[in-house]
Image (cartoon, rainbow, N blue to C red; front, top):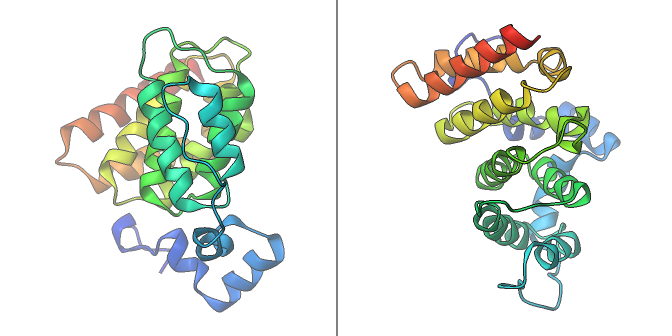
Amino acid sequence: EMLQCDPQKRPTAQDLAEVPYVRQCLLLSNAALTDRKKSKQTPAANRPLPQDKGIQPVVEYLVDNLGNENNVREALDYLQTLTQEEGITVDNSAKQVVAKATKDYVSEDTIVLLGMQIMNNLIITANADDVMYTPDIISIVPLAMKSHPSFPSLQRSAANLLTALSAQDGAAELIGSVGGIQDLLSAIRAFPNMADVCAACLHALWNLTVNE
């Protein structure tokens, strides 16, 4: 099934996680997909999401609630709103927390989309040595695209992020090494009639070609 040319006919990461052999391997590696159902039941921190107090308290809330899917989604949704503000700055440790939450819940499309949107907001003010240009964070973007091939909004957001990331020296080569180019081409094939998705992917491919 994984050899299907059409990405919409291939099983998702979560589908594969239900295959006994694959699930056993995931359990041995302590992968996030095996903890998904358990995570939904993890007790939430005994305090509400802090609002109107800036970004850092929300990040601390996210850290305290990384084991609870609903609270992670709530925190990322609020962070997505906060990081849209012009001139907002977020330290590297906070960016790493967002990346970890996105990766830990890579099978949850809404959480992954929020993670992509937050990183798109933050890349605007990133410095050349920013943590967003590290392999740990860059590799999450192609992973997100592979995990949700039939979600056009996520594909577009991920492609926009790859466009921005590829402007940094060395990042374009890293994106290529983790399969970013193939994922962009897959998105174009999956959504040939969606101009916004195709435009985002083609822009990313152009940047990767010029900067690699």
